[in-house]
Image (cartoon, rainbow, N blue to C red; front, side, top):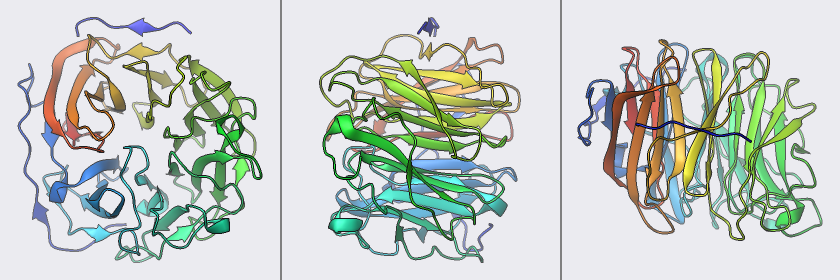
Length: 392
């Protein structure tokens, strides 16, 4: 696959609490990109800006092997946030170890918030055979608290790298994860599984395989599922064919997960698990997919109508150990690509970013900031004033 390398670069009531912006390295346009630290010294932020301009955020706090997930929202672009609500109904049932096993967030019909995560060793209920559960919850009908957490796995046990959740505006919710075929073991037998809800997360059907049987799935890598506003469903995961083909695959569905199509986005031959993450976002009439290959991060712009996508575009310049990329687009057609550098097992790092104009060319708005915590991730959203905010 050809690569293009660019050189040069439901409403809640409650007490509103201010959050302080963190100073980052100077950028050419300091108002274009601002940074925001996660509340309560939390980590692994996940953010969604909904169609009404409400920013939704979840984050992890506590012991990395048995912590909690909290939810806040903001109606003024992150200047003030609501009082935190605990997402997991059982204390200590979430996990942060490995960066990619934490909770993920989706906002669906009428602004309802959906969250899914890999359960900790103490988490209940268990998956069949007392295996690690793929836990899910949603805001209740009143938007005042989260429902009791549920395990979504019915047959495909064997979680390692975590899972994901997606939701659309019509009440469809998807929870996805990778695990071996029932009765089998090993990375080569792993597949991506999707459980589908047609009633806004009230009930889920039995999971079905979405990825090709021949590719396997990298056991301790993350994956991501995403639903766009045109009715499309997208999945990113890393293969494990023959134990060394750690390639990035894009799986798509145009019929709500009834059937799937798969294509390889990028090749990577490595004999160890890179513990990588993936992300999606939607903006400016496009869906964006991001991934990591061999210390560099890439993104591709996808047309949700035709399915056509751009060749992979690399983050500009050079950096050490680029990982955990995210992307956002504003109404002006500009995009910001954000990633971490220097992070590894039990090791924090820094965050870096680059803004691109509507023609996909890098602008002077770029920068970096130190202090991404151990096991954490970064997030980003487009503000109503045309700027971007990086969260870490």
